[in-house]
Length: 203
Image (tube, rainbow, N blue to C red):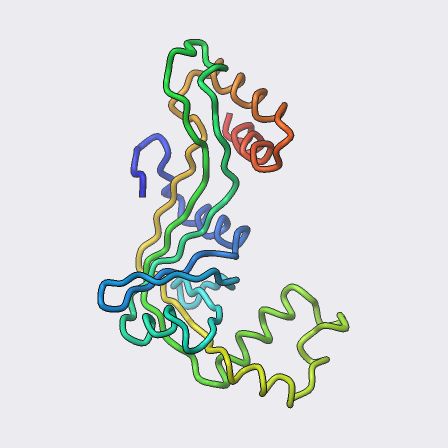
């Protein structure tokens, strides 16, 4: 991670809130020094003052085998990002850059049993569907659920280290930051607009 003082976010509550707002993260493991990665929708929970990440992965994949062989994992949560052209700086003869927000969570992974996997899927489904949706968990038949659960396994990660970088031009003058925000808002780019809104909150 790009650890520069201007950009490091050390407020644990803000890092947790960021993960909860960007739950579709990249889960990375390694087997015999060969890395494997997959995208996972996580539930971010606080249990006895520990951060737990609950999700599920497909069985018989390279990442599943990595988690069986090595419990140490890294989870990458990513927010909005955007190119920032130095052309808008007071001194444009400077390096352009990229603004972004990212949180890395290191921890140990535990593969859940059938009951734990079923609970993980139920909680995730009901979180996004609600209990009254025709696609809520309880609307599915037990036969259908059992059939699909055979192909997946729940994962529970206990976070041991949390780091965040919110690189939002904090090292620039107020005049430059205002120019950068205006530049990002003028672009027809959802990501750029979101970065601009993040910058405005910190100005």
